[in-house]
Image (tube, rainbow over all chains, first blue to last red; front, side, top):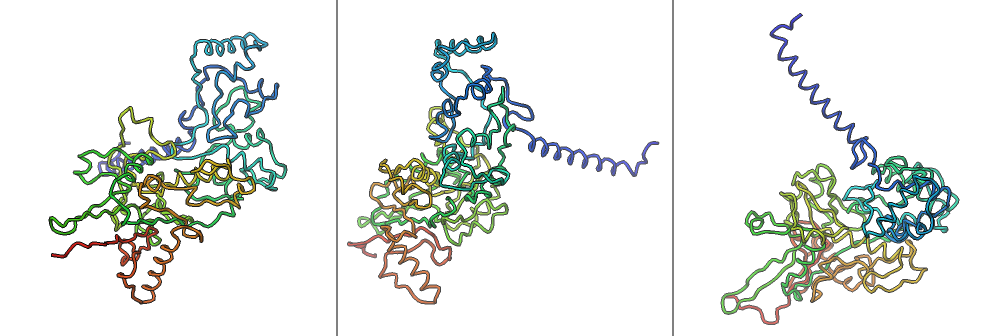
Length: 208
Length: 276
């Protein structure tokens, strides 16, 4: 049945409103679930397939051995090639794939070309996050009770690696680090933890 | 730990007798806070960004002419007129006495700049641009404000945070670079003083015309000026009269009742210009 002439403008208006509302809804949903800067997807593949499982879970290398700046400054930093070569000038890898990847690192070192790692955890430009301050707080033995992000009590003082897992998740057992597998790193997570630990929540503490 | 924050109330004293109008503070501020480069067109359109500016006044008739300079920056008012008009709460007063502008909340209504009697708020009419060779000198501690956002002097709050990190965690005095004893590094013992935290304009001022201090610090060097200025407010609120001939301390637009945290010291005139 064809709609009558009177109904046409109403239907048109209804259609336009639906399209606009739908568009707003889609934009809100995408912005809520996306991981900047990768959109809804995951981080692109790294130039060298670095398995945290082998290094951390199997060989017990501490986080701060490679991410050296994490207890000293704002950024955790990705290690320099020299740090990799510290072990890998001697260690060739046990499997064929591992040998190929390690050879990439050595070639990069020999040709003086840095590896362009893809950054996975990225905070917006207007946020100031200091790794060192957070590690210092959680590893301080004088503070008897600390609280995790979900408000759970931490009575035993964690070491550096355990502190990292609070936000980054269990990186030790991941072959590939991806965003949001730990915390979402949205402002809400920061605030939950700051409130639980009675740390100031003034805007200027984090926003610059 | 951090909960036992020492109560701060930051303030600045501007001694006009010492100000030579050299504009070092203006340059320092421009470099520290990633302020876009002001071109001739910006000034002609009256859209230049100057978080701190030197206003120049001529006094007297030739040949008895004197130049007077007055540095004007955000006054960090206690009763800030910019704060209640913001529809999104992007500007507010924090517990350290700073009038804070939160860039990521700002939606650019510009009500605050209209309501500011000191005209120290600046709107980004354009996306800020720098020549390529200057991009690497941007301060990583300060956001680059995008188009459509209000900005203003923050009393270099990024330096305050940096100073806190240096004092509490690394045990270094920011200015002297010397080590602080371990017992004094704890947050609840910490002493953020004006020595550990200076806005860039204050640090750059060659004549110390700008002095920065914590108003709650009893031993601060400019405490007496703050006390005097607060005394004036109390006297006026009680309906009394302050004899302005007898005191050097004043605040800009005191009659508006904004209670700025910046106080000015009058120029001392040993040889006043003869009134024609």
